[in-house]
Image (cartoon, rainbow, N blue to C red):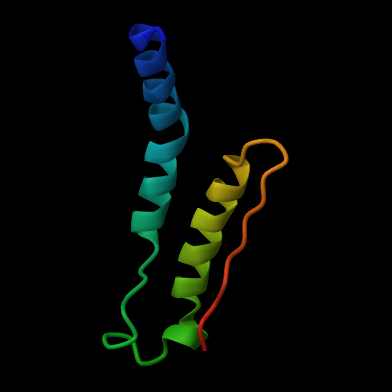
Length: 72
């Protein structure tokens, strides 16, 4: 295992993918339902979940499976 190559690969994914996604996540004014009585109507939680779920889907290894579940 080449640690330098591994470190460079991780840094590239972080810089090219994760930082942008985290920045977009922070821009969503998603608040706990305790602080946003209209959270479902406002749709911020849905936007945050969708944003992160799309990123996760893009990271899946070939032939893998992902599942997202929602609680009522």
